[in-house]
Amino acid sequence: LFNSGSNTGGCDGYSGTPWKVRNYSEGIIGLHEEVSDFFEYISPRPEEEKMRLEVVDRIKGVIHDLWPSAEVQVFGSFSTGLYLPTSDIDLVVFGKWETLPLWTLEEALRKRNVADENSIKVLDKATVPIIKLTDSFTEVKVDISFNVKSGVKAARLIKEFKEKYPVLPYLVLVLKQFLLQRDLNEVFTGGIGSYSLFLMAVSFLQLHYRDDVCSPNINFGVLLIEFFELYGRHFNYLKTGIRIADGGCYVAKDEVQKSMDSYRPSMLYIEDPLQPDNDVGRSSYGAMQVKQAFDYAYVVLSHAVSPIAKYYPNNETESILGRIIRVTQEVDDYREWIRKNWGSPSQ
Amino acid sequence: NSCRDRAHWHQRCERCFMTGHSTNACPEIWRQYHITTETRTPLKPKGKDRGRTPAYCYNCSRRGHFGHVCTRKRMFNGTYPSTPFINYYDTKKEIKSRGKW
Ligand SMILES: [Zn+2]
Ligand SMILES: [Zn+2]
Image: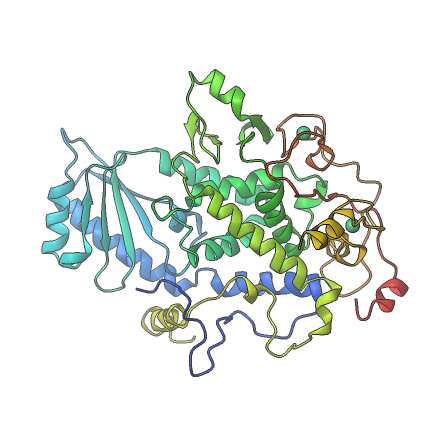
């Protein structure tokens, strides 16, 4: 519902760039300023966290009424803080059952009106069976899985890398928004998962040629274009795979195949740092579409910051970042609604 | 069309000496600001940056060289690598002569 799409113009002059609160410097310095403002704008606000915690508590309540000793944990982007206003909440329930109580929980959630009748789905045939629902009050989407530890571990790893590379959140939120509005942010719509995207960004920083990626005065705009340059142009998806463990390196895909009993590595091969025999990029059939989109972004941004572009100055409305990402009015309105309902009175 | 493509191939940048783009479109023009975040002449890093060691190649996946110098076949013909290092940082005067940039 609140998904972004092509509807970014709006007849009342909505620009699609609500992060733009000032005029930016020219070229790459301007792009740096803008990435910084986008991050400020899109980052979770206190009231959004509050609202999401309420959703989690509502669902926890239903679960604990059914199984008082079950443990519920949040993982995924809501636990790492790297979420967009419309991102899902990921929950995992730990308990002792003979068969996973998917339908029992589904029924309880419906009876207690946590989720609308037609917004709740049980995917019991999936590799990881889950319940998908949309919270009826807040429209937040929630995925609930059972007894799976990997997500919680991954969230811990993501937090560690966030500490190590302060620039990561800036890159990742721009990239998530970029993929979201092109429907490339999920494996089943022909894109890549957010864990894959995150690990690509980590590898990009780990193996960066210049040693300055941790420097406090690093230019976000340069790094963003270089990310698009690497994965849109130069990275050889046929030959090369990504390894994050032990400081990171590239691995030859044909050697991976030899060592893994003829398992054919996926187009986007990423060795899971938490479980080396797991290919995070597996089933990312849309990897080449993602590559194409990154290449497009490289062309657009590198041109927009070049001196050639200065012949078309239009600083009042000009947004370099707005050439590759837009936030829909729906999303901006949704956030306003959250502010009204969950924001503290002083705001 | 093919004539234009050929012209494009033969372009060799006088700034970074790589093939595939003109001097005006050199990625180094924006890359030189990698540690500069406000409008001013680009800051140079202290000491010469020889790059990360060991180097890994994004093209053939091997260790010991960076992707832009790799001699193996690229995934797509007609893509030209660009150097990730800054060959030259512009002076104030040079930036002025290009306009505000
Ligand atoms: Zn050049
Ligand atoms: Zn190579």
